[in-house]
Image 1 (cartoon, rainbow, N blue to C red):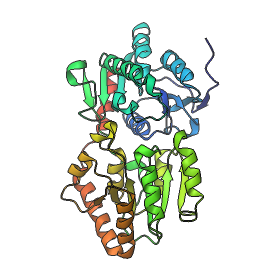
Image 2: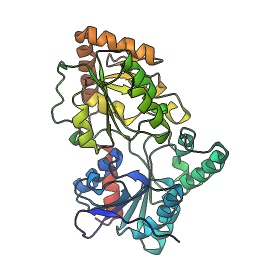
Image 3: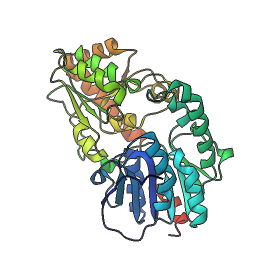
Image 4: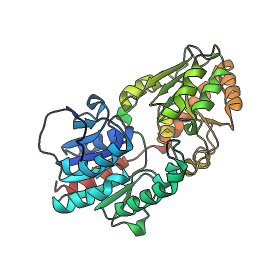
Length: 376
């Protein structure tokens, strides 16, 4: 069996209550940061085993990272990482880690928490790298791993519709992808922006609105766009060619992947948040985290007609819903021509967030449940 690539570490070794284990997530992932922050607030010691640069991992945790590598390398990580983890509780972020984590939990007397925060079976159809002949087999494998997640001591999902359902789990906890205010800009006062600026934070690919938002900004000449997140390999050639054209030169800024706090230092300079996702099976019933984050930061939202997003914002003047890039560009031009209208939308966003995002954090509820499993 080939050895795992050399890892990088950050933080000092200590007794570990919780090991957060991922075969595919970068340690800069926002949900991972929110979960670890809540675990640390609960007084738990945490280590993270994942991908990327250890320095981008969550504060207060010991971080061990590996290179992403091939799909074969991922399969190897999924099997081995649960046995390298030292925590009393294993918290997995990927379905493919669950089978080995179940075995490790039994052999090493650990407790398992499986965070199945997306509908992975539906999500596979959205991934251009998945060969179509293998799609059925991969979906069957994902479905089996998600089913096994129901055997964990605690199964965490991001929304009510995300499998496995309550009847297929020992204990199920819904932890919605709400923002952690400590990771957003410290000053979120709605103010007139000196330069019309939009932002997108998240995975960057066609299905998540990459081409739509670039074309919209190309046709709205007063606007700049900050894109924070990793660009999918399949979209890199198109993006490089498109950004070389004169109509967008110098107005679309790529920042790559960043930890949440650093990402929102960029986002805090914007006045509009982009949510121009395609209506794929994975996104049809989803409420993207970035929607809540945009609203919490007092950003007007420019969205495609995702059913649950529309329902959530019904009666609010915080968002404009558009079918395509041409319509999105028209909204942006209207906002730059009439800054008062943009300011009103931003004020409505801040009011919505103040009204709807009150109450205890679901991540603290998760941390409390994990603390009990860890014997703390």
